[in-house]
Image (tube, rainbow, N blue to C red; front, top):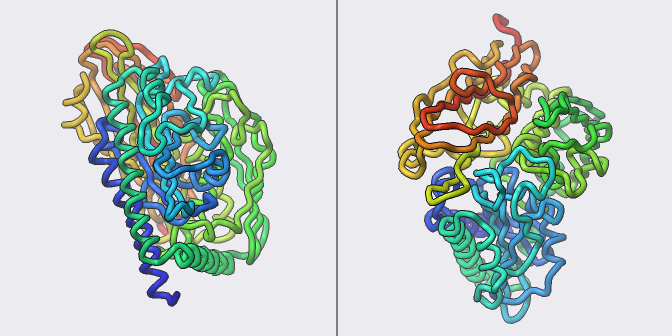
Length: 512
């Protein structure tokens, strides 16, 4: 293939992911998927190596790419299969993120796979929103080890048994059906592409795409001075008594390879900030992808020169049954800060200050009675400033790019009233360029509920770079009384929860 043909091929398979995402969003029942867009779609080759992904959720896609080769080796695949999984220790990240995988066959030959991952606000946990302040995996909901839920395009009994274990069966059924439909559309579109090229030429084109991605990665590595760069950052706490939990990184770079060695990172903890190694891979690969050209394809070849090492039993390579609900959302963001912190010692002109460093998770609802409901959202914050610009205010950064739930949708679906939704002025760190400001989001409850907060950067601030100031730490409140970074509380009608998210770090000394 010449350059134009390869570009067209890459765009065509990426468009499969885009269309899968459109189907999933429009067919889903829950605001979490249809409004917040908390889902991701991707295409993989016959061996489970990444071919393409849409611009969805980085932590979903990077972790899927890391784990898919092991997942596809578990089954004897047939046309019309759909496999579901969410087990963090068998290819998942945390239980609310449910992945569905479907194979593509052409003339009885297995050619590739499509997959999507979507966040379910109800995955069967006792705590509404299925993001509990947990100390073991079993407390976090239904664990789905990889299993076929559809065979020959017909739903198996396991599919209905799974749904019967969830609390909001109508919404959950709609979301699962939307995921299945997205995969079916992906298979249909990918089949057309394979038919146009032929099975052999399609496989050859995927190989050429990986070679091109590898060349782009080699080009990037030549721009980074070879050396060993170290950085340490800390998580505030695990919510159950352990504080200042360290992530240590020794990043070794030469012009042909990257080794990200997290030796010395603290051991796994009782609380749920632990995560599987797939989340670490997602964070590391994300940072290097950000340094590459915009037209870089999202394929296996881009990342094959990155080796990731972490001690088993550390909280970023946890062992079952460690709780992991917040690892996918909070620890992943701190991992990005650590990798960027190490790279800032090599290429400070290309690395921004730390962003707000938390997805500011709020899960809420009522799990009993006719009026039961379940809702989950993440709240943005301040972006770190860079060499050429101030940080953006009131945005999601790095490992998630979900939207906020529109106030109209929130108040239509749930017994909530939004009292304040505003920029948290002057919360970004000062400097030659200022860090972005966080958000103030205050909700009044119109009915009793249970609320769980899983948040970070409430004590350890987003760091500034090259003399820039740190951003302000976040704050959580219940009726103007402070709440811990990670907590679960019961609220009554008329109570108000206010979340003030952290600001981003500043870049450079002001006045220079």
